[in-house]
Structures are given as C-alpha cells and as structure tokens.
Image: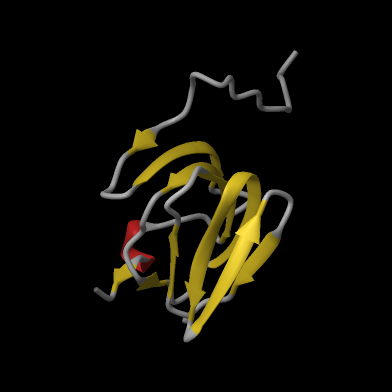
Length: 115
C-alpha cells in the first residue's frame, strides 16, 4: 500500500549554513508549492522575494526582524508574516530558532540579497 504521508526525522533534511544562519529544510513539496524549514539565526543578510510569502513562528529564544523600515521584536510563540517584495532580515545576539514556512516554496532565483 502506498504511503500518503511524510515523516522527516530530526537528523534528516538538507542543511545549509549561509553566514550568520543555520537552516535545515524540513519539507519542500512541488505539488503543494510550499516549504518548511528550521532556522537558527544570528544575522541574516537583508533580502527580499518577488513571489514568496514567508511565515516565521518563533520556536525558541528571541530576536529581531527588520521588515521594510520597521524593527519587529519577536520571542517564543510569536508569529510574523512577510509578504513578497518587502525587504527583511532577522538577527539576534541570543538564541533565536524559527520555523519558516514559504509559499510558494523557497527558490534561490527568488532570493535577492540587498546588502
């Protein structure tokens, strides 16, 4: 019988480590056109997406996200939606672990670094 569900174990998933970040892709599905990643952030680069909505849910710690011209302080349990086209960057001098949901799924061609 074909399984119609997905299980991703804690040690699984692609890990990338751009400067100031640690990101583990938990789930990416072309048919659903969405992605889910766990991110540990010290200081991301200022960037924007033309098509991607990003949703941040803080799992642990606290940090700040520059969204446009605003600085938003986030702590465990907080949620942030970043619509397409809005420059943003997350940073923290403390432990800051975020669940990032992307819709459509993250695509390097739609990740435009601004600094």
